[in-house]
Length: 181
Image (spheres, rainbow, N blue to C red):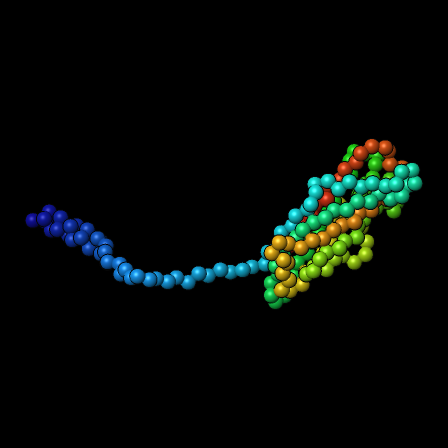
């Protein structure tokens, strides 16, 4: 008799656990609410992977060149900010030429001036490049919005033409960073 009671209790428990299915109601129309949270965002495009710097022959005039860039940015409506910066992430090589971190002559620099279209504000005056910290190219305030196609900027580079440099081709890598909050 005890065996039947146990079997009965198990069967009842299994029957109670079966979910009930309800029919869906169908109509000729329906709606949903679409929601999106638009946040601060930034993107950058550098026009060329190599900026050639040149000088007038035999006069020891400084080397010059231009890097063009495009940016897209959106900053937060209240209190938002944004920046575009540059840093020399790989100093000139090979050795015995120009150097950002350890120039052969004090005062040798890789510097730039910048122009940036609105809504950005370009750097003020000449900026001396660095291997240890970011240097400013542009700043953005609250509620800044670039054009859908992007906006433009340019860096006009100047490198000291030091007679101490050995002849040859030297390259350095500059990394640009854009950010927004």
